[in-house]
Image (cartoon, rainbow, N blue to C red; front, side, top):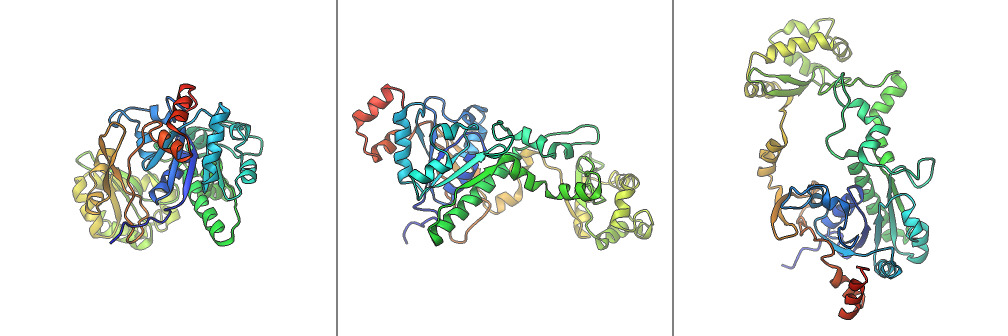
Length: 397
């Protein structure tokens, strides 16, 4: 039996990318078998390489976002480097960039210029606030976008706001860039038409804000900031057990509410208590209801509470820290971990992609060192060893 052909085998992606959003999109294309050539600055490369040094001297962000790619260094201030990039694009299918506002256009790498010069190439632009409009020239980082979309105002406790603990705006933009590129590849394959893709961090996270946006526009006030509680469902949140550990659970319907009252709270009369009779009533009287639930949880250990809630069909979970997540039995039992090499030769544990295609193995190749594939790629483009040495001497690569 031959080597399994991956779904995007034969597709070449060039990424003039940095930080999180664009690298996340291209890594997912690499996961599916695309050849991803990552263009980096000579010397330091993508600045995300230096966010931290926790993974055998490598950045946790960079290791997460850049496996299975090739690294080519080019100083695009030099016209020779721009020429090399265009040679690559002549044979590429997709070009992804998330440069600072206006930088791609100044280099002649905007979507319009690229489609004129490379008619089969699908350009994808990842920006902060879009390439047009009053904020097109602004830089945008993840937390700024969390603030601008109102997400930070929803996150935290009644006393204080908080950022979401992961780069959610970057991840949202990376996901939409990924799906947009797949769609554009499909359109090109079925119609021959090339459709450039554009995604902004702001508009990606704005889509994820849909429910609170509707709630606020038509309800007259935004959802309350309630920590682990839910603005429109009660009881819903984390409660402290007798052993000091937190248990989170949620009641989603009247059947579950009746079961909770009778079999966990041991107070069946609460089912028809006017304060708690409907979901809206329970939200309106959340403080009184939470006091009843908290008192009951304080009588039992967390393991006993979880067992009891599961027996009566209430969705529940312990509140894990990251170390507990890493040891989660579902990840182990479903064989979700693979080893990936990082610069220097060390192996690290990495999760396989969440969307599995039956019969298609996960691609989990190494994370590249800065410029690791420069010589090989230049040789493919016809450069001799002497040519490459001259480019290096002039710091073009």
